[in-house]
Length: 318
Image (cartoon, rainbow, N blue to C red; front, side, top):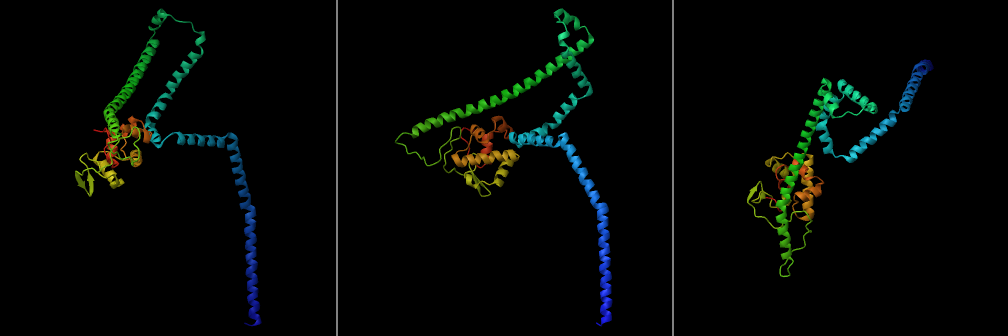
């Protein structure tokens, strides 16, 4: 390359550099003119908005709502939330009925009457009888009587449900009591010096079902799994979740999260006590009431749970 060509090349490079510098200068001017002021305005607007929200208490209110949510999570179980979800339509219907304009007007009128009660004179029996001749008073009495009738009907239904659950529990306790008495007598016999008693196994807890750890004769074998004549697995160690699912289907039980939780706790208790838990023991290890266990497993809960969990038949179960 000769000197002339080199000079021409340098001239072109110089021109390109100058063009780039000019473009950069224009971009900086655009940035200074539009973008930066706009960004400042947006930031200023956001800062002002957040300041107004904080001044009105939005952030404090949100913090308190998080506290309410934390209290709900701490004190309630997922089953309670599911029960609320099932009842939410009834709750909303009740709220909608109570918040109707005419109902609110009635409540406001009643509140005004209560506030001015000091200005009213007492009314005797004759006054009440004369007041009933008034059409509006008669309608009010009819409404009040209907409310009382429906309230009494609801209370009667609640009492009947409580009596039913109490009766079921009494029947279960009556069935288990003879078995427990027999177990105590047998234990007294075992304490005689002449009888050898195995004590290596874990102790049986109060309220659990004492089931001897001895091989059970197999009545049938299905898919390589042996079952006793009572329909329970002969060997609890052969149990798997898939097998438990199959047994549950045969028992007409749909296993969901709450039912699986009961099954797992029953197996865990069996591993520690070497005894299948009866209904009373199940209430202790699961923290559930007897009526809740009957809700999840309506037909013979302790027996059904033991079958699905692959455990021996609990003592006292028919």
